[in-house]
Amino acid sequence: MRNAIKTACALLAMALSISASAAAQDYPNRPVTMIVPFPPGGGNDTLARIVAAKLSAALGQQVVVDNRGGANGVIAMRAVARAAPDGYTLVFANSSSTSINRALYADAGYDTLKDFAPIGMFASASIGIIANPAFPPNNVAEFVAYAKANPGKLNIGTSPPGSGSHLSAELFKARTGIQVTYVPYRGAAALNNDLIGGHIPLVFSVVPASLGAIRAGQLKVLAMTATERIPVLPDVPIVAETIPGFEAVLRYGLLAPAGTPKPIVDRLNRELRALASSDEVKTRIAREAGSALTSTPEQYAAEIVREDGIWMPLIRGLNIKVE
Image 1 (cartoon, rainbow, N blue to C red):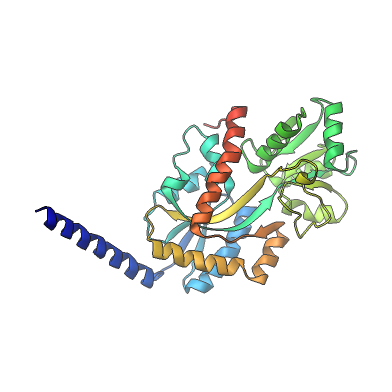
Image 2 (tube, rainbow, N blue to C red; image 1 turned 135 degrees about the vertical axis):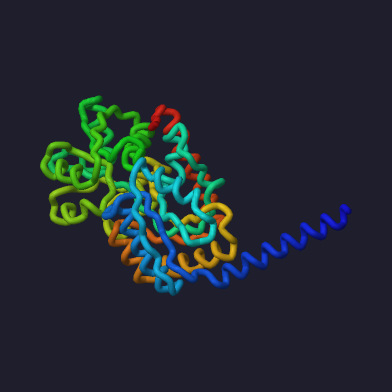
């Protein structure tokens, strides 16, 4: 009896493997939905549409972008976690959704590495420390000295609490010991307008929305939070040149529901790596003040774990919670 059970289990495993392999060979035979956890027009959406267009051509089936904004990406991530693991529902997420939310929410409703199969990274983007030209400091060292000379008097604009730009500012504050007041904005457009108008002296914000004003001399960038200088602003230093080891980078990547057959994940990974390696796509990502990334699924999973180690202690130490 025991041998019969073992044989049956082996046959079942073989059948499942053959079924998964057959599904992968036939994949995709209909349109694929790629859910974006943020509204149209933002950095996550812009990069997602590059991926969707290129993957559509590579797969021979349309990859349809479905924007489901809200709750810092929680709504979209929950939807994909519950989707059928067949490769026809994917999510193009960033660090906010994959790592930050796990510490930010008492119950995000998903666990990234349990509920998702990471496919691969695509790009990274850092936060800019951007100021009105009238703001006296011109670099990180001068900014820190100015803030310490005026404790609690400096207002800094950021996106809503728990966002990448807000947490970048919190990390900077923790590393430097400055005391500042945060002014949260719902979107980059309103924040940018107030910065140009001089209503707020300094912001931690994504760069694309401000590039035109930066190039026109209406704004200045003190530093970027990347690990190396970005191509679109090569003369702007990174914070780590003044504060060694400082890093606050959002990484963007593609994920599928847990249980998606490995051959499908591997196929999507190959296509994603190929398009992220192309000169055309690298140039388009650079225009968005980002850098192209490639990885295996395993490397992406390891990066999510590493980012957990950056953001979780900060969020829990500051007792930041979103219900």
